[in-house]
Image (cartoon, rainbow, N blue to C red; front, side, top):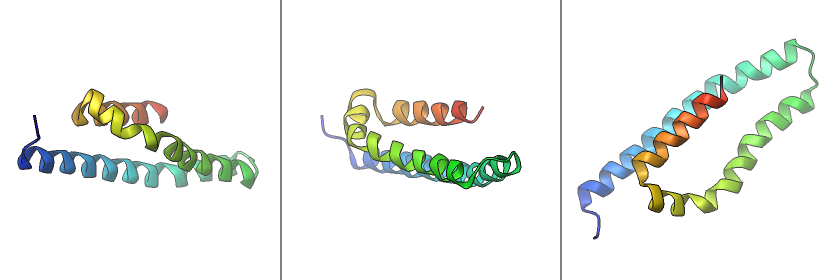
Length: 90
């Protein structure tokens, strides 16, 4: 059954909201993590590798996202992603 125009708009709003929440969270935590690592005496390469893993993870996961969205639905998939991101910060 094809999705209605309203369903498509709601999915787009959900995706954009989740991306914004993730970007804000990442933008707030990575600088603090970088400063904490520097204060504890870690070399700059550790900070660089820490930042690189986020980009590498995005590159590795991106090809699987359409299938996961189709299988689990947008809302459940995005909720799981936000929970996983939150847990990873604890």
